[in-house]
Image (cartoon, rainbow, N blue to C red; front, side, top):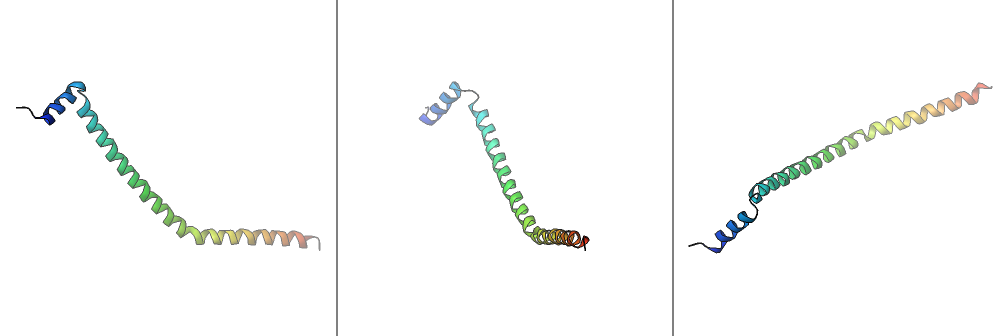
Amino acid sequence: MCDSVTFQRSTVRMENPHAERQAVLLERIVKNTSKCTEMILELNHCLEEILRANASVKTAADLATKYRKNVQYNLEATKGN
């Protein structure tokens, strides 16, 4: 005796013989996409840590640039004297 679930499965396979293969491929795609998303989130977290760690370096670089500009301005201003 054939129950309705077995009958439905065999009917689906008869209609689309590639359905099982497509389902396996789709499952692999979803799994790989999930892993990729996880890695991107981890990468974003690492980049945020790097940006936080470099904040003091950026501040020091900005101060050095402003100091250089001020020195240059004062040198040019006193050149005529």
